[in-house]
Structure formats: structure tokens, C-alpha cells
Length: 160
Image (cartoon, rainbow, N blue to C red; front, side, top):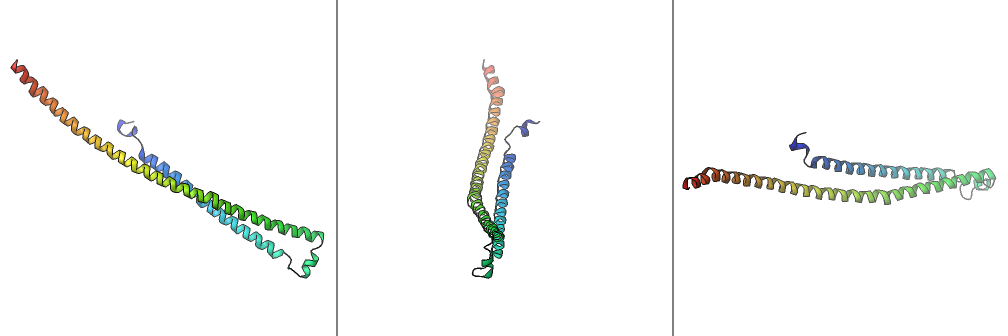
């Protein structure tokens, strides 16, 4: 381990890690959106299937559906229609509660990350400026110290 590289703050690693977290959230949002599309498609297909086998109004089939087996079949069709409605509700809730909130959260994270990066850059620039100032002051101090020990002290000893 070298002193100069291993012990300093790791802005780059932190930046990569936070970007990775945002990428995962965006991937999850995409997953939820695709799932809501599948739920809607499935609900639509269930409704179409139920509608396809429903007896026509005012037809001979409607008369035949008075029997127990036919009533059970109608009940199954109605339940399937309700089941389709549940899938629509799931899709709507996923869109309104999960997707919208997560998208807002991702935007907040991106803004917060951008602000933190700007602050880090400002602080890093301040550190570089301080380092440069310190270097100049140290050089001046060393020069004055050299003059003191090699010019002023010998002059004092000569006068004594």
C-alpha cells in the first residue's frame, strides 16, 4: 500500500457506486413498466375470452343457459371477467404507486448526486489551491530560513 493513493478519498469509486444504484432503480422501473403492460394485455385477453363465450342477449342460447352446468359455466365466465378486472387494478396500481414514485425518487437521486459531485469538485479544487498555497509558503519559509542561518546569524556572530 502506498501512502499517496490508497488512503485518500475515493470519489471515483463512490461515483461509480451511486451511478450503479441509480441504474438498478431505472432497470427495476423498466421491469415494472413491462409487467404492467403484460398485466393489461392479460386482462384484455381474459375479457375477450369471457366475452366470446357469453351467451348473446335475446337468443336461443340464453334460454338454454338455465340449467345447472350452464349456470356454472356462466359463473366461471363472470369470475374470469372479474379476474381480468383485478389484473387491470394491479396494473393501474403498479403504474400509479410504484412507477411514478420510483421515477420521482430517481430524479431526486440524480439531482442529489449531481449536487454532491459539484460540491466534491469544488472541495477538490479548494484542496488543490490550498496545496499550491502551502507549497509556495513552504518555499518562501525555506528561503527565509536559509537566509537567516547563512546570512543573518553569521553577521551577528561577526559583530560579536
